[in-house]
Image 1 (cartoon, rainbow, N blue to C red):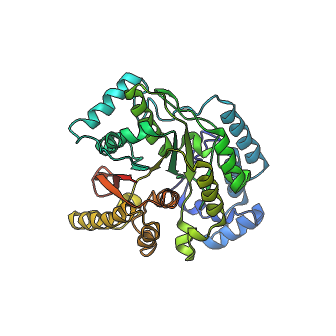
Image 2: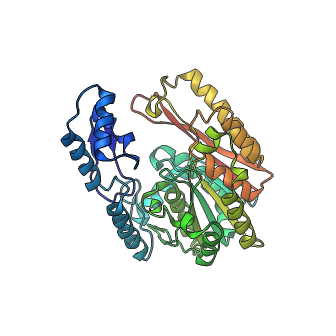
Image 3: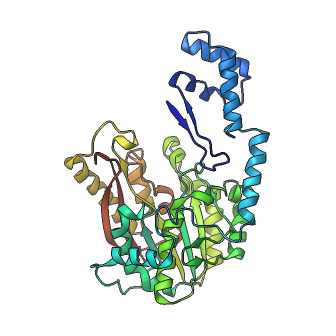
Length: 384
């Protein structure tokens, strides 16, 4: 069966298609009439598929806003305007993935930080933090955010580069909505956001703004960021969330993000607008996603886990060296077989920082299925 779910949740409905009928979905590309879809599907299956079955399936897709048509665009616009009408972007996972009550959240986070070494004394310009759930990634979060706390409190602007799990390839998606956490609302910098949107074009900057509504990558680091300010009794500085889409098409086409005019305009505008300010950048990312849960045909046994750790160590070395070309090369040369979830945000952050040094604070391999045959690797790094 095929499960169809809309990440924007224009409809709460999810559709399940039997395997045979699911073969019609690739035919729904805007170039065929319903009659043509019925004819080609019948040819593929070697049977006479009744037109009523295809027509009913198309109707269900339409009612769930899964067809790109006027009805879909109207509903998308309605949801977008409702999102923008809010005073802030509410925390999507509060009360679900972590406590919504501030004191309970503080107790949870303090538990993750127990037993860690004192924070690094250097001033850091970049943090690499996980975005996996706190239940699995809590100790790594706790170590890196405790070490980064002095640098957080010195910043006058924070940029969070988060993985856009539902974004188009190479997308850069902004929002003018400030993010809220259980501790309150993190302020934003509307002037800078407007400058960045103007640099890449408002259509590109806001085309997928609804992704911010439920995307967890920025949120899970933003909550830790706010926790640091809350613990210090200090008002938070402005934070700008930036969702970054996949690099998949660069890898498969043999092209390179350094040649992207959109990225060049974005980075040029960001560097000009932030020159002379105390900027802290955060890449809210996970590393590898491997094993049967992610489509691999092998279990992650001891040997594979050891080999993955070595590969991750090389990636982290490129990150702490501030070597964006080497970081990109390592992933591209193996066609991103480890599915590095933070590929795009990490590369973009390195390009912005032009960092020269860093340290590894923590690393972990987290279970990704009940039988512990799949895993997600995560890390905590600090960059100068």
